[in-house]
Length: 162
Image 1 (tube, rainbow, N blue to C red):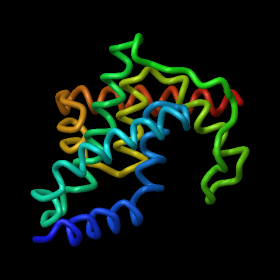
Image 2 (cartoon, helix red, strand yellow):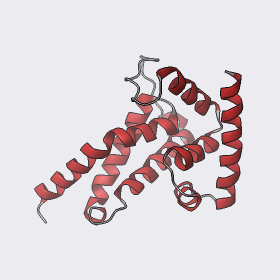
Image 3 (cartoon, rainbow, N blue to C red):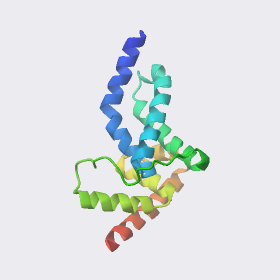
Image 4 (cartoon, helix red, strand yellow):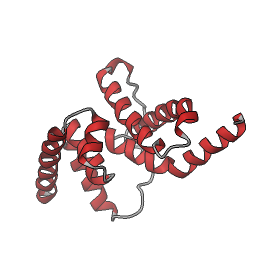
């Protein structure tokens, strides 16, 4: 396989899935700039693994897993975090829900503890199964279920109060 066809296939995948993957990264970390960094990290690692992944249907799942793990790595290494001087300057919100509802949902989501937030995003926003979520986060299925239950309960309570 030539390098140009490999690059073309990778570019086509990125063009088709980049917005979706960026939203996943944002849901994991709660900041558009960090989400861009997480996505960039994920795409670099995906490019390296592309020759063995391009023939399978696992490229998106592999990328999601990289995003989640890179976010965990960044939270464990606070000295590596950088801060932009433009706090509060985010891109346009994706279409779908009214802006007020979407904003309230994302604010409530960011109030959840980190692991509950990741479980809720993977299970209920991305629609992964309990087993898939457990594998991506490297936790047991029972832990996924309890984080999911607690996270949804807390989201419901937070949104009802607003």
